[in-house]
Image (cartoon, rainbow, N blue to C red; front, side):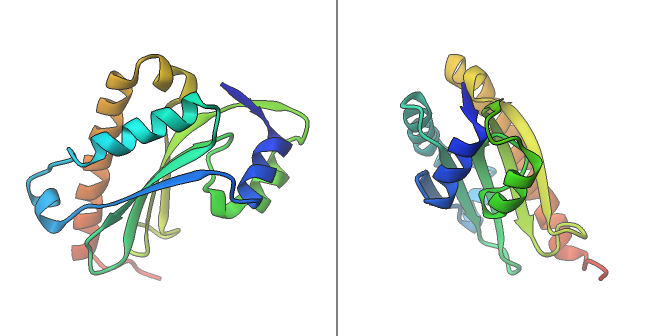
Length: 156
């Protein structure tokens, strides 16, 4: 699945994308239970199959606010940085849509953000189960990193 840069940017600026939000509890994290995500993956698949831009936003119960987002995008930057996306892409060019896992927390690292490419949207739609397993493993890893970061203050 591909999208023209200017079309993607216009959709983000007009907020023409779907956000499916979910909150994980401390108990979910303690048990390493990501079963709650099954429904949001289904919603993401539905939106992407309909050729709509979509994201999943996972809120985490840490003292320092932390989120993990899975966004369909043309470049490894979050939707909030749409102006930078516009600067780094060519308006008329077609770009493949990929799924990016964006972890945000003030105490995560110096930038407070980590972005990892998980899969192309085409691969996700063609074979969702292995992609979801990969994403779940990455989310578990990020949660572990965030738990460790909570114990270690970030130097500024």
